Length: 249
Ligand SMILES: NC(=O)c1ccc[n+]([C@@H]2O[C@H](COP(=O)([O-])OP(=O)(O)OC[C@H]3O[C@@H](n4cnc5c(N)ncnc54)[C@H](OP(=O)(O)O)[C@@H]3O)[C@@H](O)[C@H]2O)c1
Image (tube, rainbow, N blue to C red):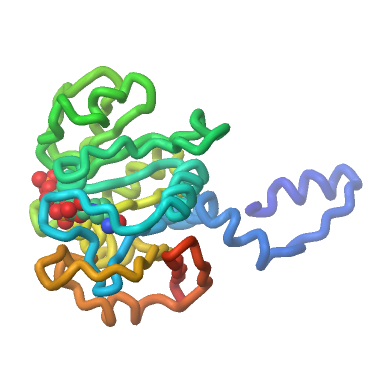
C-alpha cells in the first residue's frame, strides 16, 4: 500500500494500523512488490543439480537427475508462479511440457515462456503443439507467427546478441507477471544471474554424480562465485534428494 487507501479509510473514521506482520507478509507479496517497485517480476531460478554440479549428462540431452518427490515439488512451484521460463536449448534438448500435473491443480499451469531470440522453436515441440490449451510466450528479437496460442513478445537485444534479460523481465511485468519460475538451462541461468535478476535460487541436489563430461549448471560461471551473491534460506530433504533455497542477503 502506498498510503492513499489508508487516508481514505481514516477519513471515513476507520482505524488503520500499519506494518503488522510485515516480515511474514513480505516474502508472500514479493512478486507483487517487485512488479510495482522495480517494474520487474520476482525471479526464482530452479535447477536440479548432480552432486558434482551438473544439470545434464551430456550437452543437448535430457537427463533425469532427481526423484519423484522433487517432481511433485516442482509442479507445486509451477502452480505458485505466474510464468515458467526456459531457454531455447532446453526446448530442443528436453521438449518439455512445463505444466502443473499435480492432481487437483492441473488447471493452475501458468503461461510458459521461452527465451528464443530468433523464433527458432520447433512447430512440432510440445510447447507449440499445446499452446492452444496453456499459452506460450516467446521472448524474441523477431516477429512472426508460430502456432495458435503462441504469442511473441518483442524484446531489445542484449550485448551478447540474445534477448536482453532486463528488458524481457520488464515486458513480463507489464503483462502482469509477478513471479517467474526460471527452470534453466545453463545458459539462460547464467544470463539471468549475470544480469542480477535471480532473487531466489532453489537447488534440488541429487546424491548422484554425472561426471566431468556433464553440462555445468551455470554454463561456466564458477559455482562459488554464483553462491557468493546469496545466503542460505532453507534446507529440506525430498526422498534421496535435498532442496537448498538461497535468497539475496
Ligand atoms: N537439471 C536441470 O534443472 C535442467 C533444467 C533445464 C535444462 N536442463 C538441461 O540443460 C541443457 C540446455 O541448456 P543450454 O544451456 O544448452 O540451453 P538453455 O539455457 O535452455 O537455452 C539457451 C538459449 O536460450 C536463448 N536465449 C535467449 N536469450 C537468452 C539470454 N539472455 N541468455 C541466455 N540464453 C538466451 C539462446 O538462444 P537464442 O539467442 O538463439 O534464442 C540460447 O542459446 C539441456 O541438456 C537440458 O536437458 C537441465
